Image (cartoon, rainbow, N blue to C red; front, top):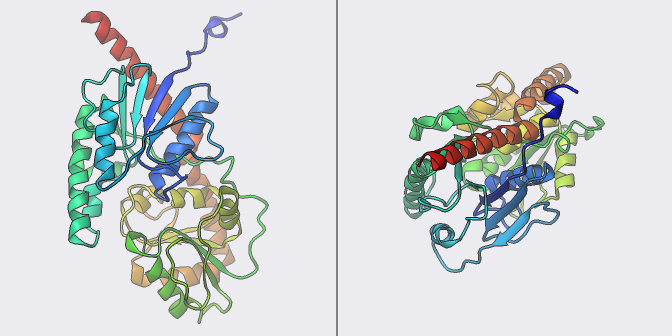
Length: 363
């Protein structure tokens, strides 16, 4: 027996996660990422509890601690509530938001993931009240990056507002779930959109452009939109699908011809990575997330909103172009494998915990 074979596996960790969002009640991407990461870590034998005001997620393999909230300013009150919680039984606190009051906490390791920047959203969001709220949340992100032992960014491009943060771990996609499948595409040329009709995702603008500029040039073309806020009357060729189950969403990715998400801003953009993992060509407008995920257009196509229709028509009418983009998508998706993301976080948890133990012993 070799020395390597006699090494005992590292002991499981007790991990407390904080997330204002979970898929049970919110379509915000942070919640989906927390759910996926918590499941992956639980599958590895760690004890994971997610503290959230959202209800438990069906099928979750991790623990759920409900933090009930009512009234206004809930995100800020959630932060105060978490400050009062006793987390001393955990080895690691991994916050995905609302941890900026948690200095001098009784937990050995405090990790914070910054999922984009609220300052960036404030530059683009409509409405004075919402803009002020985003600016205030941006300052809480700055405070959180100082309070935590280790802060993690989801892409290098989000470093603009926190240049002192060096660690980058992208969002992860479970490629056992988001996979190419059997290649059975829809008969009609199909574009898929995942996001909101209104706001920074710009679903309405895509639908209008698709009906006016794509359908006349690609007869029978269809835009299928995974969105919950679309109006009852839609332009020709546009279909709103509402909220889908995970299996239904994967099926939509697999059967579409092209994926398009023309967001004004994404810190990362999980749908880009999900589409790539299923081998779907990705079309996007330039933003922080799309530039990182597509490597500035090398593994996808970036175009301004006004030029999206030309790109979509080109891909829908060229099987060789779609095949080239399919291969690039699959290759790039390996960088966002959820298993690799979990490996990186486990390394940070254990390295940070080792430093904390040594510091405590030296004190």
